[in-house]
Image 1 (cartoon, rainbow, N blue to C red):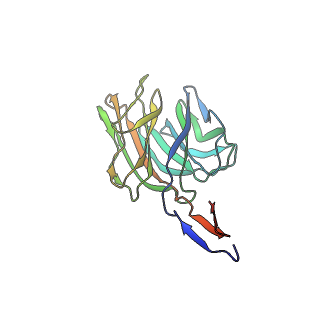
Image 2 (image 1 turned 45 degrees about the horizontal axis):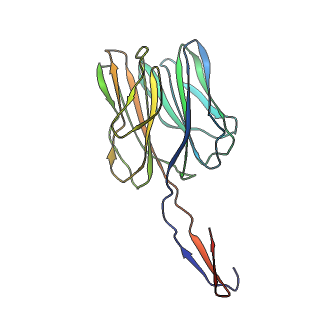
Image 3 (image 1 turned 120 degrees about the horizontal axis):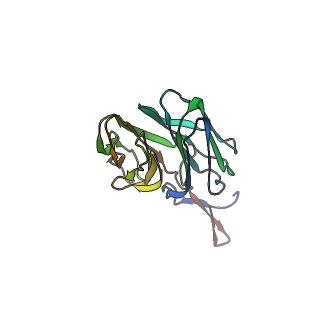
Length: 238
Protein backbone atom coordinates (compact mmCIF):
# COMPACT_ATOMS: atom_id res chain seq x y z
CA UNK A 1 0.00 0.00 0.00
CA UNK A 2 3.00 2.35 -0.31
CA UNK A 3 2.03 5.63 -1.96
CA UNK A 4 -1.69 5.22 -1.33
CA UNK A 5 -4.07 6.55 1.31
CA UNK A 6 -5.58 3.70 3.34
CA UNK A 7 -8.52 3.91 5.73
CA UNK A 8 -9.87 1.12 7.95
CA UNK A 9 -13.60 0.53 7.87
CA UNK A 10 -16.03 -1.92 9.36
CA UNK A 11 -13.84 -3.68 11.93
CA UNK A 12 -15.15 -4.97 15.26
CA UNK A 13 -18.41 -6.63 14.23
CA UNK A 14 -18.98 -10.13 15.59
CA UNK A 15 -19.33 -12.92 13.07
CA UNK A 16 -22.69 -14.71 12.87
CA UNK A 17 -22.60 -18.21 14.35
CA UNK A 18 -23.85 -21.01 12.11
CA UNK A 19 -24.63 -24.65 12.85
CA UNK A 20 -23.03 -26.85 10.17
CA UNK A 21 -23.66 -30.49 11.05
CA UNK A 22 -23.88 -33.09 13.80
CA UNK A 23 -23.97 -36.83 14.29
CA UNK A 24 -24.12 -39.47 17.02
CA UNK A 25 -23.23 -43.07 17.77
CA UNK A 26 -24.56 -45.32 20.54
CA UNK A 27 -22.93 -48.61 21.53
CA UNK A 28 -24.71 -51.00 23.90
CA UNK A 29 -22.12 -53.81 24.10
CA UNK A 30 -18.80 -53.87 25.96
CA UNK A 31 -16.21 -51.66 24.26
CA UNK A 32 -13.27 -49.35 24.96
CA UNK A 33 -13.82 -46.82 22.15
CA UNK A 34 -16.64 -45.06 20.36
CA UNK A 35 -16.14 -43.65 16.85
CA UNK A 36 -18.56 -41.06 15.45
CA UNK A 37 -18.68 -40.13 11.76
CA UNK A 38 -19.56 -36.58 10.69
CA UNK A 39 -22.02 -36.57 7.76
CA UNK A 40 -19.44 -34.59 5.74
CA UNK A 41 -15.84 -33.49 6.15
CA UNK A 42 -15.37 -30.51 8.44
CA UNK A 43 -14.24 -27.05 7.31
CA UNK A 44 -11.19 -24.94 8.12
CA UNK A 45 -11.18 -22.88 11.37
CA UNK A 46 -14.53 -24.14 12.64
CA UNK A 47 -15.41 -25.23 16.18
CA UNK A 48 -15.84 -28.97 16.71
CA UNK A 49 -17.68 -30.27 19.78
CA UNK A 50 -17.94 -33.76 21.26
CA UNK A 51 -20.18 -35.00 24.07
CA UNK A 52 -19.86 -38.51 25.49
CA UNK A 53 -21.91 -40.32 28.15
CA UNK A 54 -20.43 -43.54 29.55
CA UNK A 55 -20.15 -45.84 32.58
CA UNK A 56 -19.06 -44.21 35.84
CA UNK A 57 -16.19 -46.53 36.74
CA UNK A 58 -13.98 -45.38 33.84
CA UNK A 59 -12.69 -42.11 32.35
CA UNK A 60 -12.03 -40.69 28.88
CA UNK A 61 -8.41 -41.32 27.91
CA UNK A 62 -8.44 -39.30 24.69
CA UNK A 63 -10.56 -37.67 21.99
CA UNK A 64 -8.98 -37.48 18.53
CA UNK A 65 -10.01 -37.18 14.90
CA UNK A 66 -8.51 -38.05 11.53
CA UNK A 67 -7.43 -34.46 10.85
CA UNK A 68 -5.18 -34.33 13.96
CA UNK A 69 -7.25 -31.66 15.71
CA UNK A 70 -6.62 -31.19 19.44
CA UNK A 71 -9.62 -31.76 21.71
CA UNK A 72 -9.75 -30.21 25.18
CA UNK A 73 -12.23 -30.92 27.95
CA UNK A 74 -14.80 -28.12 28.21
CA UNK A 75 -16.94 -29.50 31.05
CA UNK A 76 -17.06 -32.60 33.21
CA UNK A 77 -16.85 -35.39 33.80
CA UNK A 78 -20.13 -35.01 35.69
CA UNK A 79 -21.08 -38.14 37.63
CA UNK A 80 -24.52 -39.45 38.65
CA UNK A 81 -24.52 -43.22 38.11
CA UNK A 82 -22.87 -42.76 34.70
CA UNK A 83 -20.57 -39.96 33.54
CA UNK A 84 -20.90 -37.28 30.87
CA UNK A 85 -18.10 -35.08 29.53
CA UNK A 86 -17.82 -32.41 26.81
CA UNK A 87 -14.77 -31.70 24.62
CA UNK A 88 -13.98 -29.09 21.97
CA UNK A 89 -11.45 -28.42 19.20
CA UNK A 90 -11.15 -24.73 18.25
CA UNK A 91 -9.81 -23.30 15.00
CA UNK A 92 -9.96 -26.79 13.59
CA UNK A 93 -8.15 -28.05 10.52
CA UNK A 94 -10.35 -29.08 7.63
CA UNK A 95 -11.12 -32.63 6.62
CA UNK A 96 -12.11 -34.38 9.84
CA UNK A 97 -14.91 -36.87 9.40
CA UNK A 98 -14.20 -39.42 12.15
CA UNK A 99 -13.95 -38.61 15.86
CA UNK A 100 -12.67 -41.33 18.21
CA UNK A 101 -13.30 -41.39 21.96
CA UNK A 102 -11.06 -43.80 23.86
CA UNK A 103 -12.01 -44.88 27.39
CA UNK A 104 -9.70 -46.01 30.19
CA UNK A 105 -11.53 -49.33 30.44
CA UNK A 106 -14.46 -51.30 29.11
CA UNK A 107 -17.88 -49.62 29.07
CA UNK A 108 -21.08 -51.64 28.79
CA UNK A 109 -22.67 -48.73 26.92
CA UNK A 110 -21.77 -45.26 25.66
CA UNK A 111 -23.28 -42.45 23.63
CA UNK A 112 -21.16 -40.00 21.64
CA UNK A 113 -22.16 -36.86 19.73
CA UNK A 114 -20.19 -34.52 17.48
CA UNK A 115 -21.18 -31.10 16.13
CA UNK A 116 -19.58 -28.41 13.95
CA UNK A 117 -20.12 -24.62 14.04
CA UNK A 118 -18.69 -21.74 12.01
CA UNK A 119 -18.12 -18.12 13.00
CA UNK A 120 -16.27 -18.95 16.21
CA UNK A 121 -13.05 -17.41 17.51
CA UNK A 122 -10.06 -19.67 16.78
CA UNK A 123 -8.26 -19.13 20.11
CA UNK A 124 -9.92 -18.80 23.50
CA UNK A 125 -13.31 -19.94 22.21
CA UNK A 126 -14.61 -21.35 25.50
CA UNK A 127 -16.24 -18.68 27.67
CA UNK A 128 -18.13 -20.11 30.68
CA UNK A 129 -19.63 -23.44 31.78
CA UNK A 130 -22.34 -24.69 34.14
CA UNK A 131 -23.38 -28.22 35.07
CA UNK A 132 -26.10 -30.04 36.98
CA UNK A 133 -26.76 -33.62 38.09
CA UNK A 134 -29.01 -35.64 40.37
CA UNK A 135 -30.07 -39.14 41.38
CA UNK A 136 -33.57 -37.93 42.29
CA UNK A 137 -36.69 -38.58 40.24
CA UNK A 138 -37.92 -35.69 38.11
CA UNK A 139 -38.72 -34.41 34.64
CA UNK A 140 -36.96 -31.02 34.46
CA UNK A 141 -33.18 -31.36 34.21
CA UNK A 142 -31.20 -28.14 34.43
CA UNK A 143 -27.71 -26.85 34.93
CA UNK A 144 -26.71 -24.09 37.29
CA UNK A 145 -27.05 -20.62 35.74
CA UNK A 146 -24.23 -18.82 33.94
CA UNK A 147 -23.71 -15.32 32.55
CA UNK A 148 -22.09 -14.70 29.17
CA UNK A 149 -19.85 -11.71 28.61
CA UNK A 150 -20.56 -10.73 24.99
CA UNK A 151 -23.25 -10.85 22.32
CA UNK A 152 -23.05 -13.56 19.65
CA UNK A 153 -22.22 -16.62 21.70
CA UNK A 154 -23.05 -20.27 21.17
CA UNK A 155 -24.74 -22.12 24.03
CA UNK A 156 -24.09 -25.85 23.67
CA UNK A 157 -25.77 -28.23 26.11
CA UNK A 158 -25.56 -32.00 26.49
CA UNK A 159 -27.33 -34.49 28.75
CA UNK A 160 -26.82 -38.13 29.72
CA UNK A 161 -28.74 -40.56 31.92
CA UNK A 162 -29.23 -44.22 32.81
CA UNK A 163 -32.89 -43.80 31.78
CA UNK A 164 -33.73 -47.03 29.98
CA UNK A 165 -34.94 -46.91 26.36
CA UNK A 166 -36.03 -43.26 26.47
CA UNK A 167 -34.71 -40.10 24.81
CA UNK A 168 -34.63 -36.51 26.12
CA UNK A 169 -36.54 -33.49 24.80
CA UNK A 170 -34.87 -30.08 24.54
CA UNK A 171 -35.72 -27.38 27.06
CA UNK A 172 -37.16 -23.97 26.28
CA UNK A 173 -35.18 -21.83 23.86
CA UNK A 174 -32.89 -24.66 22.76
CA UNK A 175 -32.87 -26.53 19.46
CA UNK A 176 -32.38 -30.29 19.62
CA UNK A 177 -29.54 -31.25 17.31
CA UNK A 178 -29.44 -34.96 18.12
CA UNK A 179 -30.98 -37.34 20.66
CA UNK A 180 -30.52 -41.06 21.19
CA UNK A 181 -31.50 -43.42 23.97
CA UNK A 182 -29.95 -42.04 27.18
CA UNK A 183 -28.38 -38.83 25.81
CA UNK A 184 -28.73 -35.73 23.62
CA UNK A 185 -27.28 -32.40 22.48
CA UNK A 186 -28.96 -29.02 21.92
CA UNK A 187 -27.94 -25.43 21.23
CA UNK A 188 -28.81 -21.75 21.10
CA UNK A 189 -26.75 -19.36 19.00
CA UNK A 190 -26.37 -15.61 18.57
CA UNK A 191 -27.61 -14.94 22.08
CA UNK A 192 -27.03 -11.57 23.74
CA UNK A 193 -25.31 -10.81 27.05
CA UNK A 194 -27.37 -12.31 29.87
CA UNK A 195 -27.88 -15.20 32.29
CA UNK A 196 -28.82 -18.66 31.03
CA UNK A 197 -29.35 -22.25 32.15
CA UNK A 198 -29.20 -25.43 30.11
CA UNK A 199 -32.27 -27.60 30.33
CA UNK A 200 -33.95 -30.78 29.16
CA UNK A 201 -37.35 -32.43 29.68
CA UNK A 202 -37.02 -36.10 30.54
CA UNK A 203 -38.92 -38.39 32.91
CA UNK A 204 -36.21 -39.77 35.18
CA UNK A 205 -37.00 -42.31 37.90
CA UNK A 206 -35.26 -42.48 41.26
CA UNK A 207 -31.58 -43.48 41.03
CA UNK A 208 -31.45 -43.46 37.23
CA UNK A 209 -29.23 -40.41 37.57
CA UNK A 210 -28.67 -37.63 35.00
CA UNK A 211 -25.89 -35.21 34.06
CA UNK A 212 -26.43 -31.90 32.24
CA UNK A 213 -23.52 -29.83 30.87
CA UNK A 214 -23.69 -26.32 29.37
CA UNK A 215 -20.76 -24.49 27.75
CA UNK A 216 -20.68 -21.19 25.89
CA UNK A 217 -18.34 -20.31 23.03
CA UNK A 218 -17.45 -16.89 21.63
CA UNK A 219 -17.98 -15.63 18.09
CA UNK A 220 -15.04 -14.29 16.11
CA UNK A 221 -14.64 -10.62 15.26
CA UNK A 222 -14.97 -9.81 11.56
CA UNK A 223 -11.80 -8.46 9.95
CA UNK A 224 -11.53 -4.77 9.21
CA UNK A 225 -11.89 -3.66 5.61
CA UNK A 226 -9.15 -1.66 3.93
CA UNK A 227 -10.03 1.03 1.41
CA UNK A 228 -7.26 2.18 -0.93
CA UNK A 229 -7.51 5.32 -3.03
CA UNK A 230 -6.04 4.59 -6.46
CA UNK A 231 -6.31 7.39 -9.01
CA UNK A 232 -9.69 8.49 -7.65
CA UNK A 233 -11.00 4.88 -7.70
CA UNK A 234 -11.92 2.98 -4.53
CA UNK A 235 -10.92 -0.65 -4.09
CA UNK A 236 -12.44 -2.65 -1.21
CA UNK A 237 -10.10 -5.27 0.19
CA UNK A 238 -11.18 -7.69 2.95
